[in-house]
Image 1 (cartoon, rainbow, N blue to C red):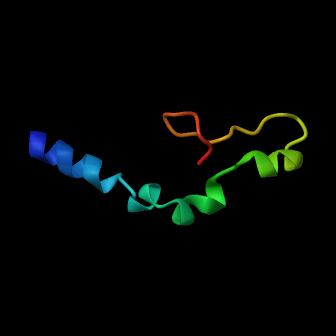
Image 2 (cartoon, rainbow, N blue to C red):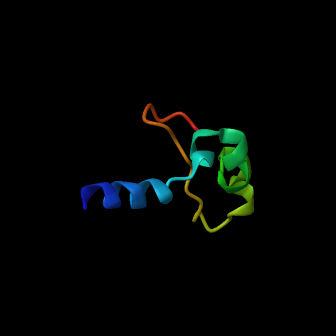
Length: 52
């Protein structure tokens, strides 16, 4: 039963998340802020608060 749950969770994991180039179309950085004049953009950062 637990192995089924683990297998299901692995199926939800996308290896693209480990590759910035792969994630680039969905990452907003400070250079993109001008396209969000309402301030709704969320800047992706790592654990050290560095932009991704």
